[in-house]
Image 1 (spheres, rainbow, N blue to C red):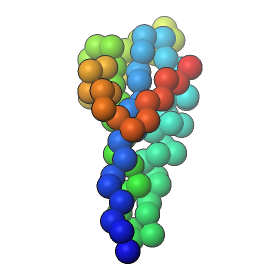
Image 2: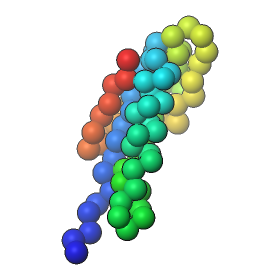
Image 3: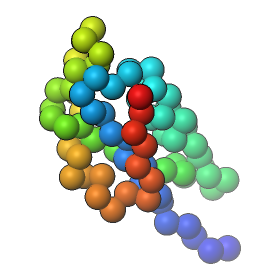
Image 4: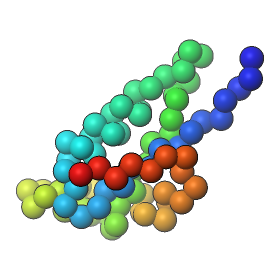
Length: 79
């Protein structure tokens, strides 16, 4: 059987992001498991800065930056 390469999904955490939308995207792709038990996707959360305002209620810490999304197989921009 042909081995598939791990696909990268970049979830952008822009200022004012809706935390629920960000969380759903991360959850859906990080829980995907292939038949061989390996992860289906590598999920990166990429922020405009280290701290991202989440709609005025609190801040999120994004481990990656926007430039880390370059080359991703899929880029998601949550609301």
